[in-house]
Length: 355
Image 1 (cartoon, rainbow, N blue to C red):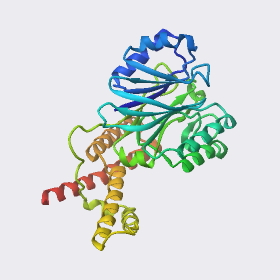
Image 2 (cartoon, rainbow, N blue to C red; image 1 turned 45 degrees about the horizontal axis):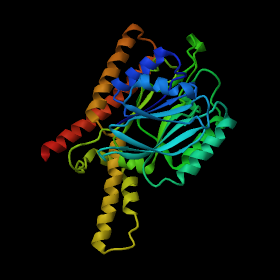
Image 3 (tube, rainbow, N blue to C red; image 1 turned 180 degrees about the vertical axis):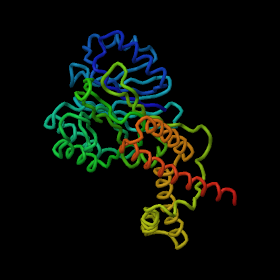
Image 4 (cartoon, rainbow, N blue to C red; image 1 turned 30 degrees about the vertical axis):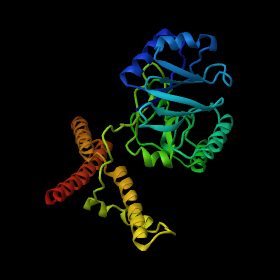
């Protein structure tokens, strides 16, 4: 199941329509939110037909005459039901026809100043109080969240980040795991005039994170836009049952291990017998350890291969400039991280061999 959002910065150019169509096909997108289309409502159906007859669409022209948010979906595979739409957000219920994926999805487009974005934060917080199921929020927030989210340009200030941070905290939202390009937007400037920032994001509530633990968001190259498309991928397992829980000894060395165990064991269970209470506490500990493992140890072999490749590239770079202290530091850090994960992998192999 792949859900995407992309600020395309206008869809009136036929070349962009062709690129969008290829993007949707090559990335196997089932649901997409196209932002800032700049298409008049009278021309929207003509452009949507060019994207493909297999798509159905929801738009927010009632609140934004420039067609700021279009949500499209492959109706043969997915059903989408509108919940609410405003100038800033379109909220809908998304479910696959086979019943294996079900969530609330909100596509977001933030305006360009701190003051004009505040109604959007209030709307997200208000909507969060009505949600009691997995909820995914994706789009162009037009706001940075961290001090490191901008390169060049004005330094990130607390005034820029506090509204976003407060909204996520109040609404119970947290960012999804991501890969690919870090900065999702650039002004396309040359040399030191290029400003890059991370203003496109995918965030979700606790129910989403606990249910779709393997979901990841890929920040792809921007192509014909100045924004990167975001692709949330979740592999729907057609086989039966989830993987059994296995405890690996190396987890006991994690700095958060004891805290996770204590938090799980402290779960209250007012009803049931003693054995049921023990079972409930063990289940809570297991869930905490699974989340810890997924966060810091998942796909261990892939991580190691990635670190090997990174270290090789750094050392090639170091060969051409052996006195560069920054590259030397990068080599040291990458090498230490690789060794750490190699020791973890060896510990896992040793434990499996005993079993």
